[in-house]
Length: 171
Image (cartoon, rainbow, N blue to C red):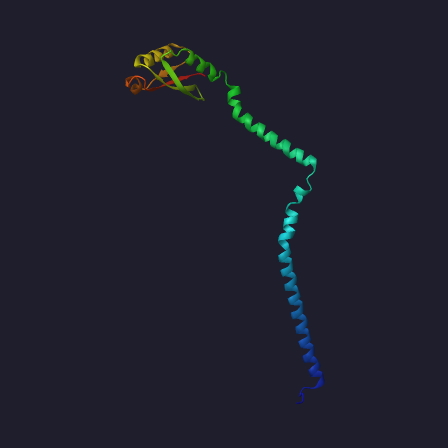
């Protein structure tokens, strides 16, 4: 078998093949390099995302703790400021309501609701309906309480049953 192409044409064809191999080889090398970069990317990001914590100085840590303490105190002040700014506290009203309680009335719990004119809800039990009504009358005569109300069902219920008294006023 003999080659029908002249020697100069053969060199040109071989040059073309060599150029193709070089281009394909460089493209494969670029692909491998890109694949290696993608496999190393998570490690790089993991190392550099925690760089702030790794380079924290004691001053930065102390500053962060101080800022957290300031935030905590500010949230406590926001919660407690209505109690501090109140002209009267509900404890005086609660103490007065409990001091007026007759011996036959037992208080189970007291709920306080603040705002424009506070309100107290006193829940308890009494041995007789007359004791509940007497407690209501004593509370109504007290000038500290603007209004005193007991549901009618509590006054007509069986002796020894639960009752609730709603008190409102400036406390």
